[in-house]
Image 1 (cartoon, rainbow, N blue to C red):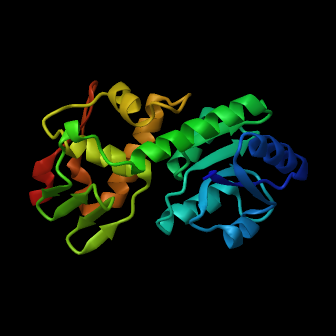
Image 2 (image 1 turned 30 degrees about the vertical axis):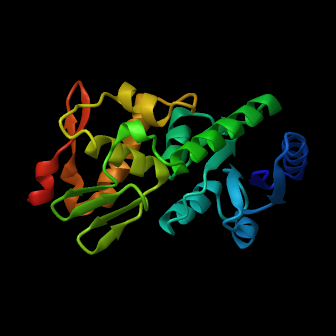
Length: 235
């Protein structure tokens, strides 16, 4: 079954060009000319959103932020004429999966779409038997359930993006190991180009914020990277 993609851009020409070319690649494509319209169309049938950042009304960043706040983990690729490092980091920090600068080539867009969809499929596929990682990791009142992709602190559910969940699970599954930023990029962003070490730091900061009183679970090792501090679950 063809993956269904929603293109959100207030420039009709861009919507038409992307729609035509992605349809030729075998995808089912629909378009919206504003974030507000996109939110009315969005359904679980969609596999990915190509989302313009600068639009009249709600911006692409605000739309992505709202989706993540509501627990929607659909992959998002931002499209934008703003291409500074800070803009890119903002895109990742609000839950984006990739970031494409305008003007772009159609080949680049198609390649990025395929990479993000592939990574999304890998995340939802059953873990290989050889990994033999426990389905549920428990540290004090912190429960990380790999089967349901849920995290709870006591009775409080913690809404994480896919990337945040993978970061937490990677660290928690190896509590005695210090992961460098390069290690984490290779494990979590392996199919995403242009990811910098600062991107890792942004996601770690957001993860700690969501963990709230258990933010200390993610410990920094200056000059090395990050590790899981299980002792913080018992404070």
